[in-house]
Length: 86
Image 1: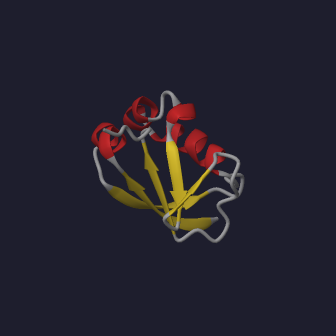
Image 2: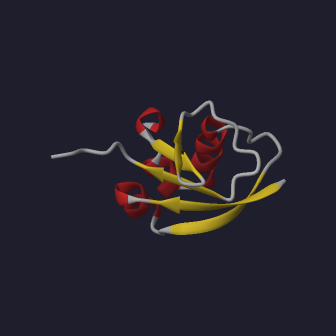
Image 3: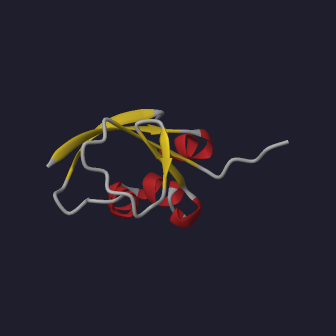
């Protein structure tokens, strides 16, 4: 197991009900996609926040990454909805 600090933004944060947390990740959680699938098993609030996980954006150590990106060695993983600009 590895420990990672997760940070949530915008409506992801609102639906989960917290801005950040530290979690122990099971050995099978290797990529961002695995992480999102794992988080959805932690309760209804996570399932609601990550219902459409394909639109969730991620950053590892403040660098944007794709869902296939390995998370090994990550100190911080941020999850947020698509950015809209204006």
